[in-house]
Image 1 (cartoon, rainbow, N blue to C red):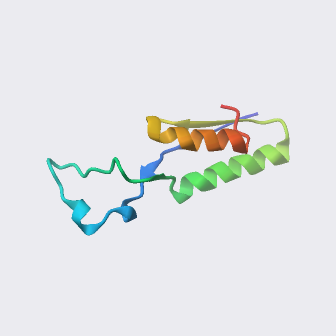
Image 2 (spheres, helix red, strand yellow):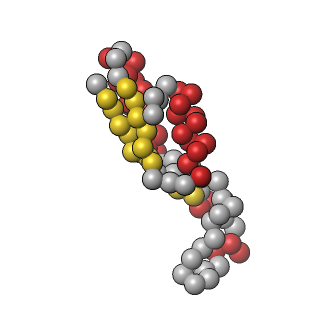
Image 3 (tube, helix red, strand yellow):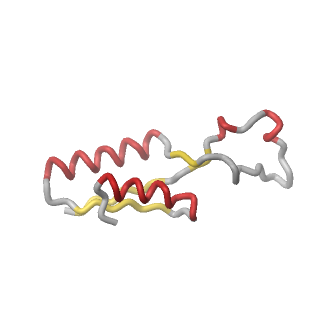
Length: 84
């Protein structure tokens, strides 16, 4: 069985200070803010890992449409047991 989990890292907007909320050209600069997964993505990843442990012969795949900011999440998922 193959299980594919789609994740979407997003910036942690709670790290922004009041003065960082200045909007220039309808864009807020969040390039310096740490990326995080939302609780639904974390739950889906945990459920996939539990299913894999219970069934034994599963291939786990994590899919994200992100740039370099997603690399840390993907490395962590490889370490947890995801195959791709």
